[in-house]
Image 1 (cartoon, helix red, strand yellow):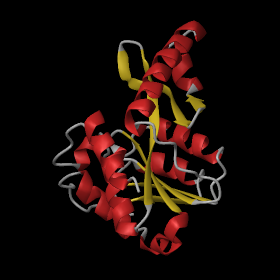
Image 2 (cartoon, rainbow, N blue to C red; image 1 turned 45 degrees about the horizontal axis):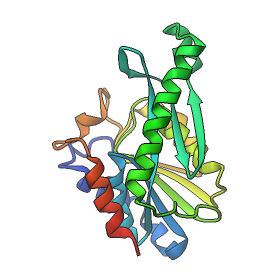
Image 3 (cartoon, rainbow, N blue to C red; image 1 turned 90 degrees about the horizontal axis):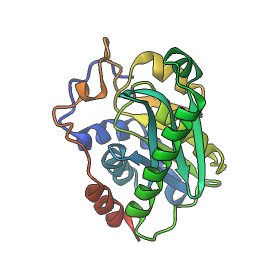
Image 4 (cartoon, helix red, strand yellow; image 1 turned 135 degrees about the vertical axis):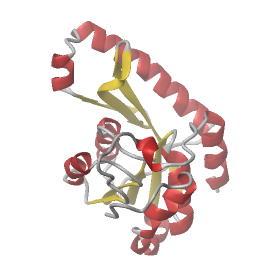
Length: 221
């Protein structure tokens, strides 16, 4: 981990920093798949895939935010194809006194948005096969790690041969917690103090649905 690389100009530069630590995976050839967490992780993942000569696909994840304070995660959901994985945070649910029916309503609302994004991004294209492949999961950064944990659980169910999580930035504690859940974990920068993912970027403008669609279309054989 590089503790002080300076801020990234944008997600493309962040992707190059991540790819530099993953060069040995380029020899995997057609067995290598890079999954970008939508939306912000997709442009980072596209650069990683280009640098490594890998296939690219999108993994749609949704944070389950606290009512009135959506920045505070109660958990997250992720989907690979039709299967949806839920990861909840019991401590957060208890601390914020979220009743089961309220949590269920949040889940159902975010599931609708997750399915909408899946349909919009793929434009009828099937999800890339995961079973038996080396899979690198990429986001533009980690904060609590809830969405990445859901994403890892969803991808695990598809039986990849080897699973890697790679991000440009994240807090040290979250990185330590996630590193035990995959075969390899790469975080290019763990700033201290960590405030937010955006602190690592000069340009952290939100990625749009249209950008995700264009990126995926460019990688379609």
